[in-house]
Image (cartoon, rainbow, N blue to C red):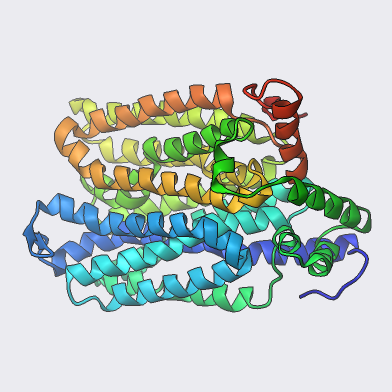
Amino acid sequence: MPTTRTGATGNERNSFIYIVAALAALNGLLFGFDTGVISGAMLYIRNTFELATVFGYSIDSSLIEGIIVSGAMIGAIVGAALGGRLADRLGRRRLILVGAVVFFVGSLIMAIAPTVEILIVGRIVDGIGVGFASVVGPLYISEISPPEIRGSLVSLNQLTITSGILIAYLVNFAFAGGGEWRWMLGLGMVPAAVLFVGMLFMPESPRWLYEHGRESDARTVLASTRVESQVEDELREIEETVRTESGTLRDLFKPWVQPMLIVGVGLAVFQQVTGINTVMYYAPTILESTGFADTASILATVGIGVVNVVMTVVAVLLIDRTGRRPLLLTGLGGMSVMLAVLGIAFYLPGLSGAIGWIATVSLMLYVAFFAIGLGPVFWLMISEIYPMEVRGTAMGVVTVVNWAGNLLVSLTFLRLVDGIGQTGTFWLYGALSLLALGFCYRLVPETKGRSLEEIEADLRETAFGGDAGEQPRVTETDD
């Protein structure tokens, strides 16, 4: 725990808060690594195991591949469902430590799996750790960050997700020559170990500390992450929100919370059903279908990963300047266009010679638009818009929905391609992107520059000072 003092100087505060946020954001790296590494490993897993039966049942091979990929999503649903309540009960920091251990164990099981069934079990265990990480990482960072840089710091989580994906692609490429998929999956133990060791030295969230009667500890953490003039003011804001909240699951369905529950669930669904994880999980498979060889398709996927990281850096730099809504709307518009182009590339037979390059460029631009909008904004928004007492629970509910959407997409992608073709599949995702654009334009609030307590107070004022069913004032863009 940092040494108690009245307040941090500017340089001290910046150094410490960036270190804390960067370590916590390693949760995102675990998330991203798991997402990206399976895409390359699947090209070789199918050569190791007979993908005709699983758990004694004869199943179509494409469905078994989907089960292997989506095993992590099943685990992540469990992890996210438990993670919200555990984050409220155990604390944010402790749950990060637990998640790192679970992810380590899952990666080890996958690396030594003697059968496809054990591999699936390892994927599920691995996914539980990812589910914990996806809930508690943004939550912890949002609660420990000063309001003026909260957007950028929470978006570090998305940056590490994309970095984890890129690292996974590079690992895939490094081991592609020998088809060593066990090394690909087993190397996930490394970031898990780094996260665990690093978080041993980090503080707990000040909001969680105060809520659990540890006011002195909460003041200590705030003193290390805020300038002197902010410490007591923010402590009073936290005190007021703790005093007025009942903290039950039913609070999520109160009239003043319902609009934000709809926003969170809607963003969770649209982040998945617009198809991003078909690219993350199946990019080598998609590119292989255009005529690229295994190694070439993995190398092209590395290029997609680089674009993902670079554009996420752009989003981190812009999100506290331009706001959440402009990035979200721009990103969804671009995704819709790129999915249309990708569908056309597979539709026109005259493009057969160039289809691989058109597909690669389209996928890169699609990922670029996702990386500046729906990717980072979703995780940031759900860490901002819920009352403190149920913030962990609310994020757990929304993240469960997100992982359920991920599971649906990962299980159905290959089946959709078999049923309606690549063109129909990508055009379906494009239509859903347009629907998401309309949803976000109508309902998603702007939260730039507000403290978490101000956002909550605004929601309460709307509900209890007027019509409880009105749209909260935070839906107006703050310049």
